[in-house]
Image (tube, rainbow, N blue to C red; front, side, top):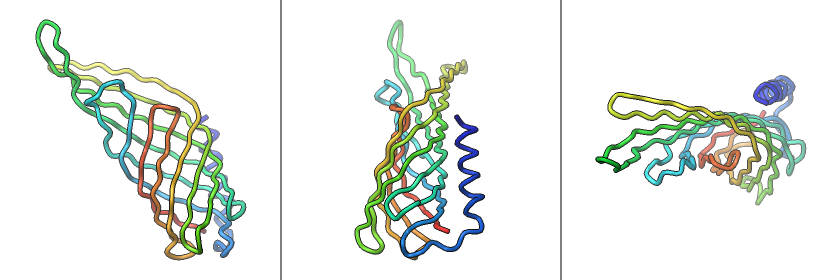
Length: 184
């Protein structure tokens, strides 16, 4: 799955490298980067999301419909307390690397502002590290499933936009981010 998404991303960039600038119709290729707060459903109340980031690229076939591929890195950390024969705290850190592909629907609200929604497939590779009194353990898991996203963006120029987005990946990982996007 990762190789397929990587090939699709490279094909998108390769096909758009010699494309003309985006027309006023809103079609063409784009790339972007985002940073924000991540969420993982670890099953522990005091393990909270940390900073996450993503890289993405896509192509708008029409002003309202496009396709996007991307990579997101999310993490969460905290201390889990247990009291059996004494109380102790286990430090827990989880990281998830996600590759996704999605269809994107855009609803323009005027010339510069737009709402967006996306739906697609995601592949997660998760790793959890736990430590207690100098001893450690780790586990990893891969999971594939659906992904979704909702967002809004404002175009400052025909090529440059800033937006906010919430994406959920394979049911137990999410990223709320502020994005910078450049259209070719």
